[in-house]
Image 1 (cartoon, rainbow, N blue to C red):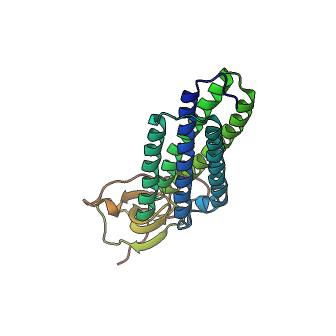
Image 2: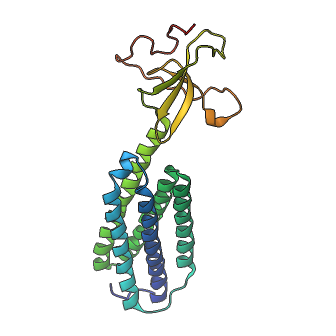
Image 3: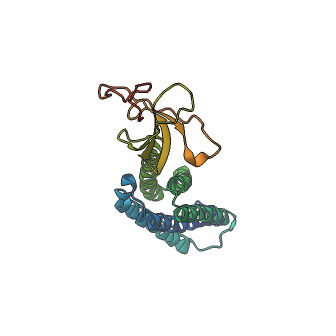
Length: 252
């Protein structure tokens, strides 16, 4: 990258922001990978090797920018770098706190925030290089923007899979207890306590079992019975006694 067409001090400040952010991104990936080995979600487990590769690419990005800073010399203004450092530290803290509490989605929401900022930071440098007609820099920066786009896409895929899992229950939920004497709505329906596994394992009260069941209570909510999300799935696989409103023989 040549320097003749640039305000060197301002360029150094932009590059210092990138260097700071990329080093922080490496720390964020390290925290995420540390958490990932304790998670049993298939989408996370299957992505660990790719996450490690993306972590190494972030490190290479940091080294590349640091090399440019060394060549350019100069003293950067620290405002942008300080902002990047504070933002990144908050995200690392989010990941560590979520890991300690056993939460999963906050870990990857933090990564999503980081990758969105990362992509935009590199695109800004690319636009600057293009405006001042620095073809060598454009080639290098396009490669890094493409990498960051792939990083962002993976995080989006992980979040989508985790979000879907967190709100959808498996149809083969385990019936823990047939609540023969439980009739909160006075409709003579059949109620069951089911154990459903998604992003977490919970026990709920439901009317009907299997596809078409209706969730009535999330026990963790406290405060008595309340209607929860309705999960109704149609299809030919619905058998007798599985749809909402079906009748089952109650225990004497």
